[in-house]
Image 1: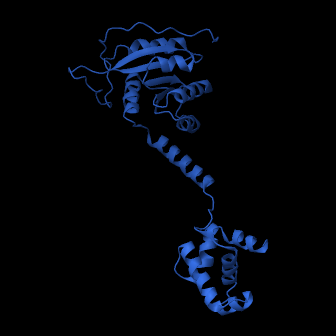
Image 2: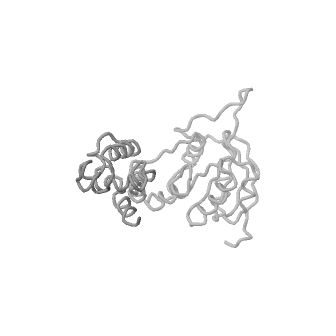
Length: 259
């Protein structure tokens, strides 16, 4: 579809549809008892889908169509419409790109992806794009209405298969980003204290360290007290274990050798 195929917002149809979403809670009510409809903007390069959804959803008392258009619709137009939820067709990558552009302008905007294949790569693409909900390709109008209400409540309903895929990706990302951080307080140790912990790692006693450094035994004890305090440990026997566990032993050793 050419870039000049932007669709104008359709006229609202009087709310008389019997379509309902069985697993969506009622929208909030106005002080006079009436419903406060959720405003939607629909984006799709399939004109039939875009106008069909607009026509069907406009019949829902709990929803209001703020506008609709193709994926070339300027994000500013979506945001300026006052829409609370963006329904976007993600049959092409441009759908998620457009939703990201809209959310960059209006972070509070909820995005519900439609025409989503229940394939791991598609679900994960939606999650990484920050969508608030999705409707599978075989979904119904009731599913769309439910997804909109769930998004407004910051809830996501998904199948066990989708949940497993999301948890799997989370575990993978966590494993990739975990790095061995420096031991607590190691950067605050003085050059002399780094020398002390190197000798401790070699198994030397306080007296042997004092002779090696040509300082008093009491001075070594004072340094040890400071080291234990900075590393937040209780016994000198824990120093090497603590440094190795936090990936700081090599760093500490290199600092001493370059003095």
